[in-house]
Image (cartoon, rainbow, N blue to C red; front, top):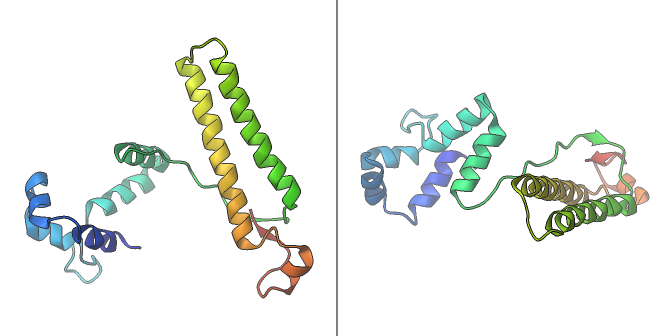
Length: 164
């Protein structure tokens, strides 16, 4: 989805004039954000600027800030590349082990009924690693990586090597 398309969708549920007033902008600029920039009629919108800032700097930190502002958090998706096919049992075991490691980190931190800032950072790191590992697992499932080898060979475009 293009940024102007998202803004157009958002404006279906928000009042452009009220939004413009709150942001100290003209309503026409808000409407221009909802138009494509390619034809010359649109205007670069804040989403385009955030994307540009992320591309030119530390994109993960920009995304983390935006997610925190929206009440959430950012977990980077794993890099997917050509690898040997995973064995389902081994990949499942990796996720279970990562989950166990996260629980162990939590238990160790909570053992003294106090969690320090450093322990909280370790818990967050483990949690984000678990989410990333799980996302990788799900993507492998979606790409057919965990299908039986014979079934992978029969699917058009599948070589037996899957995305990880």
